Image 1 (cartoon, rainbow, N blue to C red):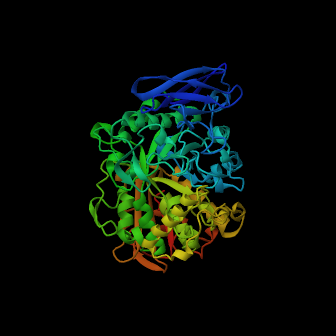
Image 2: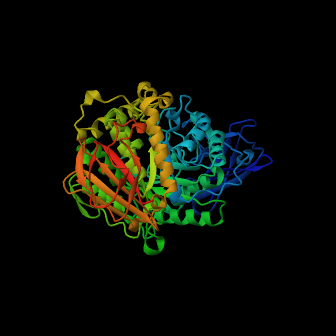
Image 3: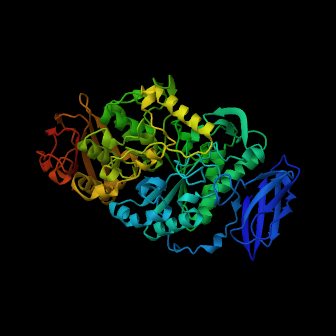
Length: 608
């Protein structure tokens, strides 16, 4: 059941809204010939009507029970922000030029996560387009955009959105997003959109006026949970499922990244996430190109990835935090907060082999057992990274990895992620070692809400031992301005060398059959028994690579568990072309050899 306003052409527009507790619902037309037109009740609490004399860009709102004026919950555009009227959009007005686009197989994705507002000084969708060929030359083929659902003000990560169908006005709105997606497809790049189905932002959330979208049966960090399994939940589910299809159909989005699905509370026998997976797969069956769901889950629960026939949700992939945490602790030595559960080279080897590290073991940080085993998974089921918006922005001052490790450590991080069997994701600027922070920022208009956000940040940092007076003000413009990328850095020195290494690793990943394989059974990740050194053997048919990673900030001599044969060096992070100190490693190796690795370095050998 489609909701919101659907422009039908010839100045006719269909309106449908779910308001089961209301006795009257009308549309207030606020543009041109201002008027109020009553809608007719339909089954299951919907109100519906087709209005004449409504042209594209008409502004409107709903009148509930003859007195309460509210924007459309499924508004496609909020030109005046979260508190203003909604606007009718003629989606047929945009000329798509991606008729030849057939999408990409998920296992081929090289993802680049970005925040629209800080990716460029302009902070708009169209300002991203001139950078696409630069990303394409790097090897990126999938752009992941942080949430763009209309949020308060102009500065926000996007997770405070209150109009899930609306496109942020300050980013360029409907036309801007379509123009960006169209441009991406024309250069062979997929687009992933981050969507938030676990909560709504606190400012501009008018859903309470319409119906039981929320339930106090469960409490979340944001208050009452979205109603996915209580009375009236069918229509709530419809609202979100139609939203997913809306992005696929009208914006040609290739995949959705589902924010924090562990915060979706649903004890029903057929969970919403399962229903969403089914709707996505059904849409893909007849679509021009495939669509995917990529979940963010803190549960290490393989049900997210398992087929619906076996009781799973049937999602294509998920972010793998365990991989990030294992890598981060080895690189930085940090052990605060949730990092206390990580830090051993054996853990990174486990994650490299299977994704999850915690598969039912006791977690010190959680003070309970955590996770289950990722049975029947392959490399495409996990998205891995060394940095992302959460792991940077949820630090005290938004430090990137470039502020925490030296240049050799940055190269080592790149090698670990891009030589893994999983789908790699880069966070904007990572490829050249961007050192500008990415901090948490908002621009709310409610003083009480601003105070609450400030207090929440203080409480969040207590577990990391950070001082209250050192916490940046998320409402201030300074944290936003400091978070904008400094693109000019990548043109010289070590920044250019790091970008070149990323480019080479991505190309190697695509060209070498052993690295292109996502088959986890064709991989052996072996930790050294005494040093933080990882041996990675990947093979496919006749092709094979053997990589050695040294996470110690000192030289280490190790005996290699090298498979039989002749192995030729194809990449060494210590080479001068990557800004290294030079390498003494032999260009060719055979079994039963001992080598000395430079601090924070990696080397790759091939059997061809």
